[in-house]
Image (cartoon, rainbow, N blue to C red):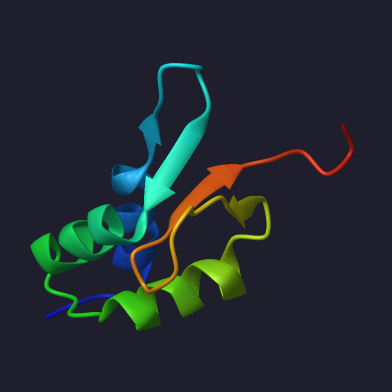
Length: 77
């Protein structure tokens, strides 16, 4: 049975560090981690969850669609 706190865990597990040292998370990685924890989100639902719950991540995707990439940013510089 899926538990609500596992969504945050799945998000944390999906975070990767790129070559420049920035922390990023892709929608597909997040959905994969959610499935591993018995949650079944569509890419659109996953994007909506990220936008609603993670204010320190911004969309840096280069293409249109539901397969997006988010990066940590500091709004204070």
